[in-house]
Image 1 (cartoon, rainbow, N blue to C red):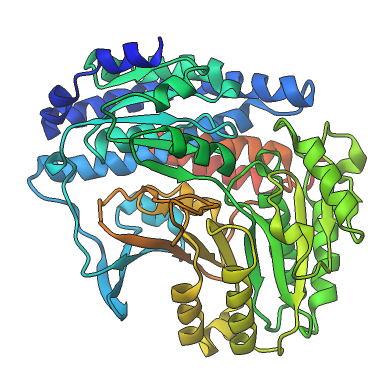
Image 2: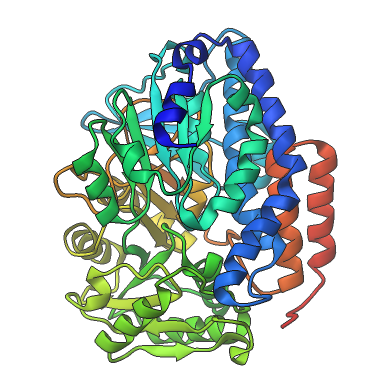
Length: 531
């Protein structure tokens, strides 16, 4: 279908008039379809990536995780919203407090019982400008939002958000990499197509879609250059998420050997997920040059990348050229080979000791590259956070996602200073003792840049998400315990089981599915390294 045919096929007014009861039934039907087609989605996604990286490079379980999990979480959050609307009220947050001039912090996660089971000590917070205010999606005006899907993830959660949180009919265009999975998504969302609330178009219809008259907005995920081109050509406003060079701030403290290994593995693992093609993955690790444990940490990180986590395939087109540019411009770059280089296209580039104006500061990698930048700061939280905040805000490319690692003792001693940094860092998503991609996976938080303008943006303007429909969100924050588990690619069989079961649980939060997830994790927990 072409873009104009899709627009003509939609009944935006009819969708806006659909009751909460009817929508809840549609959500449940789509969830059932997502569970039904989960294995097929995973197989199609893995086939595409293996076509670029080589046979056996990506498993079906990885494909399931990168398609089903985010959509499952999003739909479950939306379902809880509509369950509340059917009962006659908007869902309530856990609470809120004023944290600055005209700035409030709203506690939005976890709220529901099964979310609490998996959240551990993690809390999800929204920083909101002005007194927190929610708006029912049913009170929003009718219209049409056109969505240009990402290339690195086929799971276009913006589609569900536009339909059920923004009250808009939707045109969805896939990235050319994801044409095959979009066919499956059309079957999953068939009930919305039948309602004339959703239409899928061909991947080559980007220019035509942008030029459509009568759109409420265009949602885009992709490169900054393409986003600017769409904005220049389109009459509708653009809401965009375009990546960037995301920092991981290591607050000086006293780490045990166990802490070193734990976080080295977590950072190496999130850097390898989806072959490094994740918008919110950390790229630049920022340390204090005067932290006595800096060299110990760098050694632990090298070991985690090369020996303690398995290889994943860099599949995204153009990644080889990106790696060449980083290697040419950064003389301290090291090429590490997980599994001795046996896994297809799994070489990892690690660049310690970069300078504040280096190539690696001003460019996004979007593949398996990590750099480390030692700041000239004192060996304490206050001076380090002051200098790191200034560097990140003023020098580092983009404003999408940020990590802060701070051991529990240091956090306790410097709690106010850490929260000050959360308010001052200009990032749309900040994860303390967690990883920024988990903000994208959380239905109650938002994903996007922070404080950028339509005239000159890198990471984009606006944000997606927010299952409680709060307005005027500045950023989303996760705060967790220093011992939190995020991703640990230490056993391939275990991770495949976890990816499949966790993805299906995101769609079907039954006790049966939870028992399957928890039981398999317990069994796999006895296994050691299998690569």
